[in-house]
Amino acid sequence: MLTRNPKIRKGLFMALCCLIGISVWGSPVQANSNADSYNYSYWGRTVASPAAYTATGSVNGLDIGIGILKEPSDIQVTSDNYIYILDSGNNRVVILDQNYELINVIDSFNNEGSIETLLNPQGLFVTQDKKLLIADTGNKRIVELDKDNNLIKIIEAPQSELLNSTFDFQPVRVVADKAQRIYVMSIGVFDGLMEFNAAGEFNTFTGANRVNVDPIEYFWKTISTQEQQSKMIMFTPTEFTNLDINEEDFLYVTNGDQWGDNIKMLNAQGSDILRRNGYFKPMGDIRYFADEGPSRLVDIDVADSEMYSVLDAKRGRVFTYNGDGHLLYIFGGLGNKLGEFKTPTAITRMGDDFLVLDKALGEITVFQTTEYGRMLNEAVRSYYRGDEGEAFNYFQQTINMNSNLEFAYGGIGKALLRQGDYKEAMFYFKKSMDQKNYSKAYLLYRKEVLREYFSIIMTGILIMAVVISVATRYRKLVRRKRGISIE
Image (cartoon, rainbow, N blue to C red; front, side, top):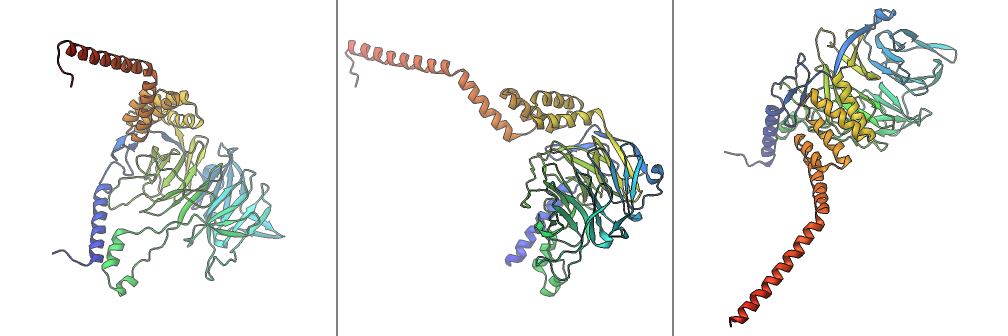
């Protein structure tokens, strides 16, 4: 017999929904660490895909000539292709040129006559004018150096009414915008990113994650006693796991939220404005084995033309999306072969190449584009620039190499839509299952047809009206002649 307790009924319903979700999304698919290249269809199925990137080599500390890299945690490539590696275990920053030749090693700095060192630093960021920001985690501070490695300032634990008396400042990631505002991700902070002004003064928190509830945990809370509930996990916002910033100073962040949005794009007000118009929201793998769980995103890299890539530490894969949230390609994996990782921890781009940092192996794996990857990247860039003709050609070549990429059909449809070829655009939107743009193209095509045949249609209507009028009068005249009443 069904219970009449509304709390228990609600809990049972949520548990049932959760089990259904696990059976749908947690079914075994090809998305394991040793899978070939794949993508996801409109229906959520894994489909074969050509490799967009292939590993061409790896670089470690011995290759560079500086000894073993010990648990490196972050990497960044500047606009002039200098590579900054945060060698956390050795408490230093290693700088290379684009040929992976050593330029400099920063392991200390002068602070008013005192030589200071780093302690287990976890994050770095290089500004456009070559200022270096280091999240010096072990020393609980942010260190900012100029291009000549002279100390600019140190940001230590701030004093603010927004922070409680037990607050422990442990910065692990840091970025800065063009206005020299500094955004810091600190361990144990659930209120969002910490924002500091150019002088290093704490302003506020920004972009706090919402609380998302695990349905199973919620179910047990609804039917548990007060004593049992006190021993359960509290519902608190998740921490961010990494961040990056684009040329327009929008912040891209990842977090460990399994039930909400684990990728966000934050504006100046801290609001999430990431577009999620793809077949599925950006989140890494959308299907996986139930005992593995969803992707655990640990880094994000923002490229040009609104493309961005995220790194999944759980399965060692890199997922790249366009600005609308369509999944472009996937590469990487866990294993011992070239192009696979043990503990991937950070990603960055150098031109179109990807550099993936492995914390456990202490090495960088270099990935270069295949012809398929180049075509797809250029298709996205062309469309972003508004070059419809070029975008059409690149998307067409992409489809010739991968007919399973439904998103590319939509790209061709959008290019045709901009060019005014509405009928052909409808064909491609139908193939990409893009109902919204199909309806838009249909309405425009209908207007075009009506405009083209308006004179013919109106002429036909007038002729029909005249014919009907003449026929009616003739009929009445005939009936009068025959003496038949018209009433």
